Image (tube, rainbow, N blue to C red):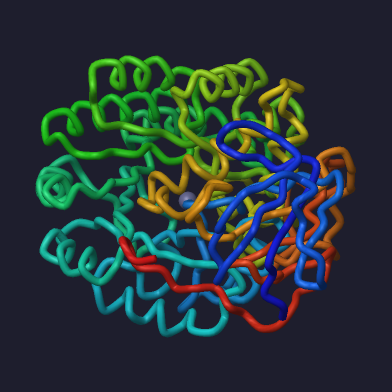
Length: 453
Ligand SMILES: [Zn+2]
């Protein structure tokens, strides 16, 4: 592996705009940005030509599932997929691994499991579950980036959902630590109501799955979290916001100074329910993919910064658990695999605007970096920032085929779709780790702790 001295291209995405430039690197850090022709000679330089040079993606919503459910995904495969997709830092969710990351000891077992397996940088969220308020300080001190909780059953028994009473125990602690609480925002009540009407319905029909997770489950949960964020002056982040009806609630809360942020995911922006055929459980996630009108409103909310950014919620399972043979949406694992495909999926659907590349960086790199407290050294091509960089061709198209996917399992709703935007090279602290389909050297990703560089 070679440590580079400079990367140049005709299209370098800097916070001030896109320009032809040479990015100079020293000890894995961006040391200066000069004119395009100020390019040192020698072999430790990379010429990106016409391709885009921008900060590597930061994906703060990834389920790696190791240890304990390593047959679902794992550090090695997930981080290879990340590198191939231009993601240079990811933050692992506290559930689906066993143990779940709800104690400091569990966080340590994750770090041991991840040791020397990560191709990109990996950090960890801790979990808030009923009864673990006494663990939150220790998890924070051990380096958790913040905390995640569920308001509805999570899908795995060892990560229980919390009630408002549990949140009232946890939020004062998190507010004192000034660390964010990430919330799966759906409340059980509206879901139970909806399911009563669906008892005899066909489980292979997407429409029935869609009806079983009504938007009201999300809007009532978002309203509750806004109320609690305000009451405790706590930082709350809504994960995978799916419904246009939640957008005005967030907009109004932000306006009056509630400390709330929100993300959405590529699948809510790329797909629409009308195109999902019955039995196609690879599209199953919760909350569900909604209609085209909803999809358009989410794009508008992003453009207005009501929704702050886009992260994958990569959450695969073994193929058998997706129940593709029966097509039963109610029995299938709810989770979409997309870690490697986020960049081209979003880029494909972005409308051409002169500042598109800067928005892309904001949505997929600097925005999520800010949630994780990494914004001072990740998510920008700026002096002093880590040289975690992706070089990609925004005009080139490719078709998603299983053999190009590095995820442990190849099932994804993006299969056979043609996407625009091909990742050519990925650099971690100035070292090339991925080059047009090849992985270079050995896994060198850092295991990050909150607040440490
Ligand atoms: Zn998730």
